[in-house]
Length: 336
Ligand SMILES: [Zn+2]
View 1: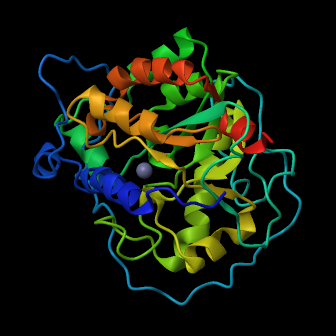
View 2: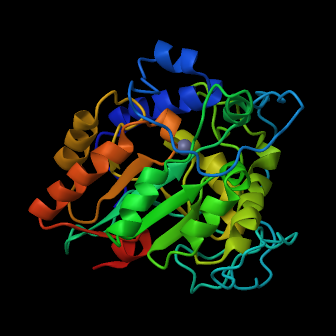
């Protein structure tokens, strides 16, 4: 199941969003040919903006590669990763995220071994996984604070999925969760939605991952563990699925995740939604590539992927025509 399909193209497409996320500005996005705010489209803000008076810190400082940890770590038994759905005041508890959960949690793997990397499920059956990445960097937060960007949370996507009662999987960065706690609560409260991990602040885990600032090697494990600690208190359908920013990973990055007992999920269908200035190319990209077992990569980041909500109904119609049915990631990967 390790692919295969259009890796180079995938990386190119994802790169644009990554770059836009790093720079966090309309200007940079325009330079990349990405239309962030098509004329005439209103913006829906997901949560009330938080007032922060401090100037932003750097989006992350590129750091020379430090010597790698050996990739093994704590393996003591963990508490279950899930908590009660519908909790209203998450109280992150220190230490939980770094502890591997029991094997019953989707995506959980044996801690201490390099995690598997999965692009798609078995090519049998008729299920496909719709996955939505929720990127958030310091630069993006700055754009929100200064009002340059209204929202990195596309409520139209969530509303459509809710209305159609469709399953989906959300790869959340810790900083996105912290910026949109109400929406995170809403995602966690939906029994059809799975929550997964997309790092804390969308830093690169390898060199040359587009223009993403890099997380120091020594911080990789904690970055991902911390993100689990941010997400877990929201309960709902927690998983141990993890996606690297830009899909960039190497042996060192994978070794750093070994203590956490995760499954790395890339995906085999890149929608190209961050590039799109219209919905049609997104629909074409998805429907041209999608097959049984596919994992479709889209974004719920609104300003950085402004046409995704318009593309989605057409994607769903195309899937129906092909006899393909959306399912959660755990269902798609488990199907045989
Ligand atoms: Zn991302």
